[in-house]
Length: 264
Ligand code: PGA
Image 1 (cartoon, helix red, strand yellow):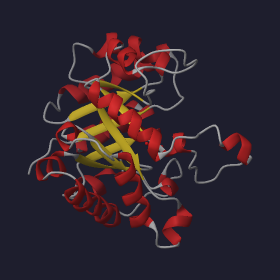
Image 2 (tube, rainbow, N blue to C red; image 1 turned 180 degrees about the vertical axis):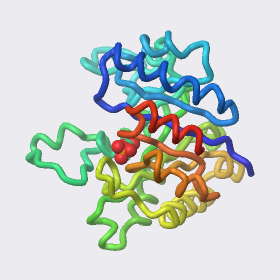
Image 3 (cartoon, rainbow, N blue to C red; image 1 turned 180 degrees about the horizontal axis):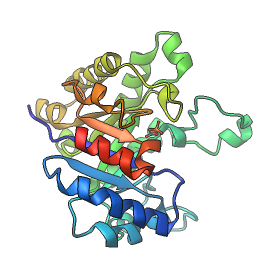
Image 4 (cartoon, protein in one colour; image 1 turned 120 degrees about the horizontal axis):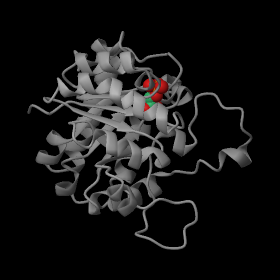
């Protein structure tokens, strides 16, 4: 089944409003030439409305980096799905390893690390809210270096998927994307080998086919993320198991991100 490719830029906690707007302006020419793929940028919350104004007449789509699962209420500091829709979002990242507190190297003490407390249970609640609100989730899964060394990659990913997707109707998941993001490859420059990324992406799809309907498991896009750049992206895009990329650092640079969009 031919799936439409997806390239998403995760801006993380970078860029002010003027910087974000200038980046959007510089990548638009590349985006406008690729109406055959989906391109999304995921700025931080305060930038969303501003960036939406700059891209709303273009094929470039807007995504958020996180969401809270309740509809509304006394939840200081949280952002609801309705607010994201209002701001112009159509996508939302969920379960990123940096929200799960799974960092490759981190000097924070345990009490502080606890702040990044995303779990498979909260991922499940967030996914339900996003799907109910017609926002397309980009669900991140992936193993740490230690887990890989212990041969636990498959087990970790299956656990993240089965718990994260637990009880969700397959029919709702058709528009979802899953990003395989090995924690050790994120922001480190230690990019995963293309064949290995393809092997894990294919594992993800075969696991999906066991827990979801055939239609859902075939239509969900499986992306690779972790130190993707303009120079190495072809290694991933040439693999038939990989339907696109979730890009962090390189999405902040207009030339790099445009190269990735052109190559997808
Ligand atoms: P990176 O980040 O491209 O900077 O490694 C990817 C991600 O965290 O989504």
